[in-house]
Image 1 (tube, helix red, strand yellow):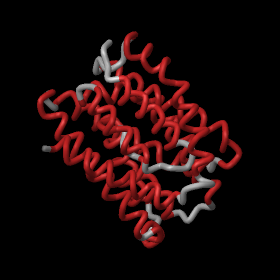
Image 2 (image 1 turned 90 degrees about the vertical axis):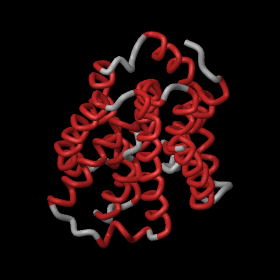
Image 3 (image 1 turned 90 degrees about the horizontal axis):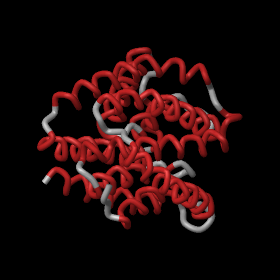
Image 4 (image 1 turned 60 degrees about the horizontal axis):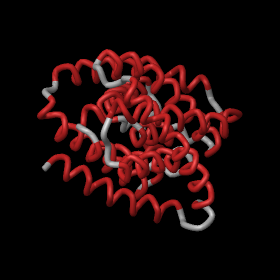
Length: 242
């Protein structure tokens, strides 16, 4: 498998950063992989790296998981994953790049709103309808573009969870849904020995990104860092669309 080394290395570093307390970096990861590979193929290559990053996050925050919240969100999210799987079967390859761009643009804007108004989630009623709506669209976004992070961030903020519980619950939630996506990605032909071998070689960069991110938090304010990354994600989304 031929690939642009710089883009792949940068994407792997971003996976580690996103799991160390910089969730906005995940949007840049999606954009980098879509530049390095055909848009549809990039989602399958990225998935094992995300799972490895999720394992790192679970190890760090495993004591702060609220399992009742995970159980509440899994049914609608799984339904959304199935809908996203159907979409990926139906979307022609030529159309997938702009669709991925629109999905990335939407989640980037949601992340920007969350940063501008951190309390926006708390104003949303904590109803079953809200949970199912957010869970369904998170499932679609994660299946089509690996971009459910901002959607779930808004949902978890609505619950006004303590920071440790929010991070720990998110870590386990994303590990579970990313593992659940493996058979779907395999059925779409997005996983194979060459891509898995590439992921294996990039795993040390995920660890490096995780280590770097934890130390970045002490040097650069997270909000400023994520604003810079959101600008990059916005530019990448527009490039995919155009």
